Image (cartoon, rainbow, N blue to C red):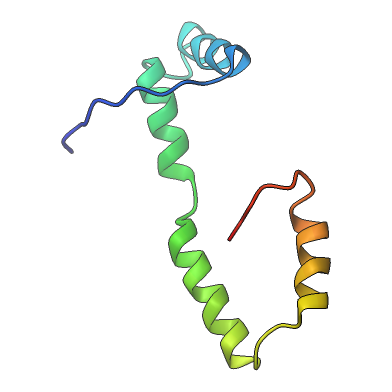
Length: 81
């Protein structure tokens, strides 16, 4: 697998967690730590496409239901659109 160099900024606590994983032998490197996390992360684009298809098959979703779902699934107010 080829690699691409990127630069990211993370909270200090996250950086420390990655470094602890390296120091304890749970990750080969900080880059390896984040690579493993990304590889285990679901493919959100595919999940979103599947959800959109299910909503369309169900005839859509009311604004009331959409607000309820966002209140339950998105407590931090992150824009999921």
